[in-house]
Amino acid sequence: MSESQQYDVAIVGAGPVGLACAIEAGRQNLSHIVVEKGSLVNSLIGYPTNMEFFSTPELLEIGGYPLVSSRYKPLREETIDYYHRVARTENLNIHLSEKVLRLEGKRGQFTLYTDKKSIQTRNVIVATGFFDQPNLLNVEGENLDHVHHYFKEAYAYSGRDVVVVGAKNSAAKAALLLNRQGANVTMLIRGADVAPTVKYWIRPDLINRIDEGSIAVFYHTKITGITASTVHFTDKTGEHSLPSDAVFALIGYHPDYSFLRELGIDIDNDAVDTPHHDPNTFESNRKGVYLAGTVCGGRHTSKWFIENGRFHAEVIATQIANVLSA
Ligand SMILES: Cc1cc2nc3c(=O)[nH]c(=O)nc-3n(C[C@H](O)[C@H](O)[C@H](O)COP(=O)(O)OP(=O)(O)OC[C@H]3O[C@@H](n4cnc5c(N)ncnc54)[C@H](O)[C@@H]3O)c2cc1C
Image (cartoon, rainbow, N blue to C red; front, side):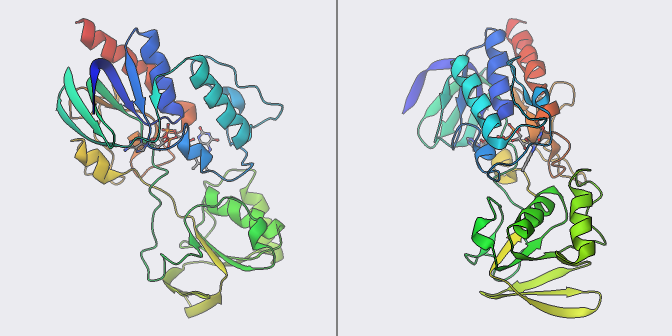
């Protein structure tokens, strides 16, 4: 199926930044379509139940709409509700459950192919984030059913042996929630300590639980294999095995590089595999294709977040409007 209309801009991804891009496109009188492979704000729907954002509400706002929360920091549920209401209020043209696959043509006359149709568009904004691609341990047993790369909630693990792999925010928060729910938690940390970048209100809580012995931890670890009931690893003292009913390997995420290459976007040869873009305009090496939001940071997934990534939208929409009117 092919859409007959040609849009000024097609936006890939209906996360907070993709939605901000659609709003700003509208304010620049640019026609738009948003294509999202999952649900509206799909990544946020995958976050832990009742997760508290680390940002205060006003820093998550898009399009100038106030995010009202009775709390200092809003919950996942309030934030999802907010973005859904903003999208409805703005009457954004969003096509859900539709995956973008590839792109042909050039600036001014692209054809964007999805798994449902082809779309004619003058420009493309890629706002695909990183949350769908967890970093893997790459060990045998990682694909077993009790090994998870996302954490949702702790209730199912009360009284059970749980291994949490990782030392950053997601691992720290999961370990604390599991511990409070009565799981027997052991953290396996690759480095010498809990990451110094863990948020300042989470890190001392975790360090105190480790110091009092209620959360066990091994440092300088390397996982060597996982079976149905055991995690095997090494540390500086040698080889070890731990009983485990569940394993949470929470060691970060990365952008979908094969998808970005499929779109013709180069990956910089730097330490964090940055998808190539002009830092002022966010235009990639493929003219007329822009990057927005967290995808811009490559493997440096804490460089851009909602707080700062939402501002890409106005820059890109203005740039597209200027090019179209030139
Ligand atoms: C647990 C957690 C907590 C966080 N807390 C905060 C916080 O408090 N404050 C803050 O500022 N940031 C926070 N972040 C970071 C930031 O919020 C998220 O990464 C945010 O979702 C980024 O928005 P985005 O629009 O760039 O990407 P995303 O929200 O990830 O949106 C990308 C969208 O693109 C879609 N997509 C991907 N590929 C395709 C395709 N081929 N075709 C169609 N659609 C596609 C995805 O389904 C997804 O919906 C947090 C991140 C995590 C993981």
